[in-house]
Length: 166
Image (cartoon, rainbow, N blue to C red):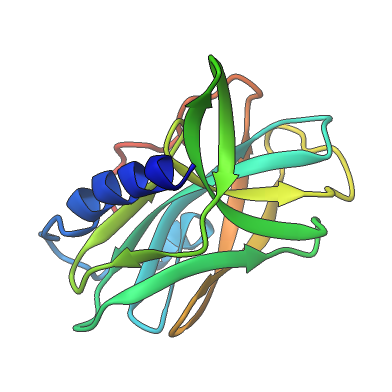
């Protein structure tokens, strides 16, 4: 398992060192899809509709600060726990395993996405239906980010606004 986590972290370090480009000032009309605090910018948080007691949250994160930050997990009023997890194959089965933290380099980005990293919500208080939304608090070693999460179809592979410029 340690080797799998190291492989995941190695891939993530390549992703988190990607340089950010473009204008980081966003119009207020996109507030339902983004949040910013402590130099961290989150965009397009989403999950799939489910009747299960767990769900995975995916989001695009950008570290717009001049220092490294570490993503450590989260909290949500609709779940008992929110854990940072990474995807891996175990004996031919796809599973998500807990990861203690992931670094995001200064001016770097980290995308939580299917078959990669995610925030796993366990002990959901209710089913999640397409079109609903809720908040998740994404926790970093330097603070937290309150992020709106959009519930997409149960077979979604990306946020419905993916590719939309902000």
